[in-house]
Image 1: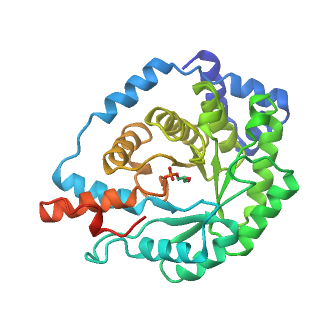
Image 2: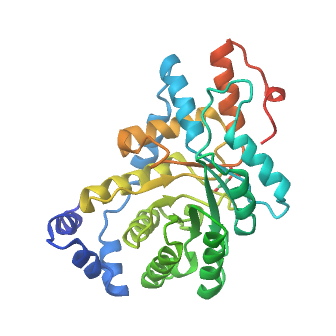
Length: 329
Ligand SMILES: O=C[C@H](O)COP(=O)(O)O
C-alpha cells in the first residue's frame, strides 16, 4: 500500500462524518480523479500468479458437497438473449426453484436474471419461492443510450417487480476520465432502484487495465452499489479469476475503510463446477468467509448449473450421470 493510498484510506476510516468524507472525495471530477488515481497500482504479474495459485487448491469430499451446494445457491440463473420468450423464462424459473427433481435436498438458485420486459413473467413464476428476480437495465449490454432512457429502463424493471437491478457503467465516459458523470449516473440509478438491490457491471473486458478495474470498483462502491459485477457476458473477456480477485480485494478494503460490505458477482463464461469452486476459494482467501453466502457473492451464469448438478449427483451415486440426466439450461 503506497503512503498516499494509506493516508486516504486512513482518512476514510477516521473522518468523523463518513458522509462528509464521501462528499469530499466525490465533489468534482478532479476530486474523484485524485482519489481514484491515488489508489495503488496493480501488480499484474503478482495478481495473476496469486489467482493461479489459489486456483490449484483442491476441495475434497465433505467440503466439496458443501461447496457445490453453496455454488448452486449463489447462481443468478440467467437468460439474456434476443430470442428469449415467456416460455423460456418460465422453464428457467422452474429449474431455478427445483434444480434436480430427483433430489429435493438440492438448494434453489439465488435469482433468475432476465431483461426488463420479462420481469413480470419471472416474478409470477417465482412467487413464494424466495428466489429473487434480477433484471439487467440501463441499455444493457452496451449502455449506449441517453440517461433518461436508462432510468426509464430501470423504472420499468422495478415497477414490474425486479428485486435486483444489474446496470452497466458508461465505459466510454469512464475511459475518457469523466468519472463524475459515471458516478452521477450510478447515483441516479441507485435512486431509481428504490428498495431493489443494485449490481453495477464494470465490464472489465472493456476497461483495458487492471488499474482501471480497481478504480471502477471504487467508483461504483462510492456511488452506492450493493454489488460490483465483472461483466455482461457479451464481450470477449468476461469474469476471470484475476479480475474477480481484484474486485474481492476492493470490497474487502472498502469495508475496512467505510464499514459497508459490498457483494461481488463474476459473470460470463463460468460454465464448470471446477471453475466455480476456484472462485469460492478466491472469495474465502481474499475477501474472507463473510462473503461466502448468496447475500454477498453470486455467479452470473446461463449454463453453470448443470455441471454443478452433475458433480453433485456423482458425489451422491459414485457415477457421473452425464448431461441426459439434467434438464437443458
Ligand atoms: O450475467 C450473466 C451473463 O450474461 C451470463 O453469461 P454466460 O452466458 O457466459 O454464463
